[in-house]
Length: 273
Image (cartoon, rainbow, N blue to C red; front, top):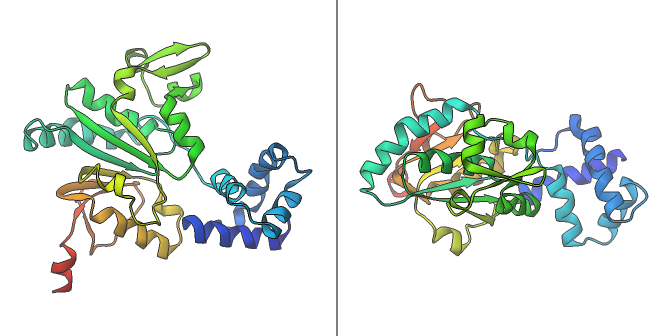
């Protein structure tokens, strides 16, 4: 991959998904794009990119973008977050909502491990939930929709008890049981775009999880995404970011002693007053 190609890739990632493809990831980018080039019938990555620049094709462009995004995730990632959710927030919200299903949006949910982790915690307490997991990667969404994971993936973050309770063996893999899959809906959403009507119709949300997403974004995109998350969240709802991620203090206020947990700030009208 030439430096010129990498410069164009940086611009593509920033403009389409707000992703900051830093210079130290040039070799990683070439390594990830190798299989895409072979799958599309090109001799090497440079030939793949030459075609993209000379004859831009939406499907090829998005295939490259999805390959370069960081979609790593696992079950119950950052266990303290899930302990807080299960022990404190779930019971409090269940009481406040008087039995209504708790609505949760997992924004940037990749292949579904985070959404299924939340669903497991709720179902184990017999608390009804409606979880929407969105991502920009169609491949990740299809994997989450199937709810099928390898032995390595299923053991990453889950106890043997949880694995056997919520998943069943399918050949040499593990699939989420129907009751777990029914609690989670998957949909494709680019967080830089206005929220689609069908997504907005699934809210407003009691909780939004957007963890380890905005840290990889350029500043303007990060601000736009946080702004997108503001309106769909109920006034007494909570936003979870990654443990090291920060939100604009005008939109969300951090909860003391709870890394990554935020509540809504004043409304836009109040801030403008």
